Image 1 (cartoon, helix red, strand yellow):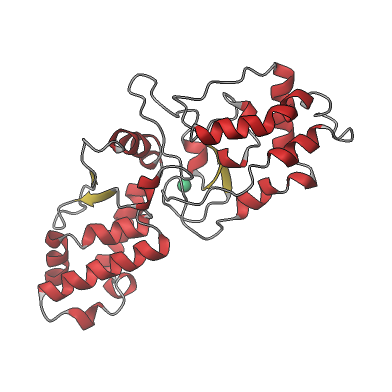
Image 2: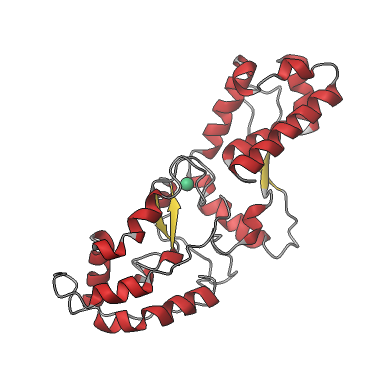
Length: 276
Ligand SMILES: [Zn+2]
């Protein structure tokens, strides 16, 4: 999971033009009304920060819904922003889960339930295959906890979780530990996001493999660690700096950062110092 910049252009002007294009069979003339409302809907979405507790479905007809999903799957050249967004973070951290190399688009408000936002750039978040694992689960109307939105939730920019485990156990059981308190206004959303997105990915398996590799080949995971072996304090500082550097490069909640942050915990770093 990672905070990223919202696209500058909502895409609503291009969308409105496309709805008037008579050559677009499968679309014309079904979206003319929605095209006229597109910039108003974009503003409503932006003002509501995409929050499903606020945004009500616009109630499209079945014909409109089919047409907008068709245009999302087959965008004309004037709507190239959809394809551009999909590739915009190739090789980088996935904003939704924190894994690597997002190459898909996650409809934050799902396109089946909120089809009117299916082509709105603010609602399209580059994501990896975690996109397909979360399904329609978006929020809990009772508690109002919801999935975090990488364009709007500033808390994604600070460290939200790390892992607690007993380094001497084989294999250790990795438990997710929240770095924000339960009284924090973002806590409910962070926990909902972790339960409904992160836990559905192979995050814990990835961490477990990383730990196994560190024990087997510390040089592959911890560059130059042998230069920082004078004492446990120095080694702990080295791991903390490594984690900080990774946070700057890949984000405070990228999986690689979370791993380094977790092993720079004093109990773990002392164990690595003694055993690796
Ligand atoms: Zn992902």
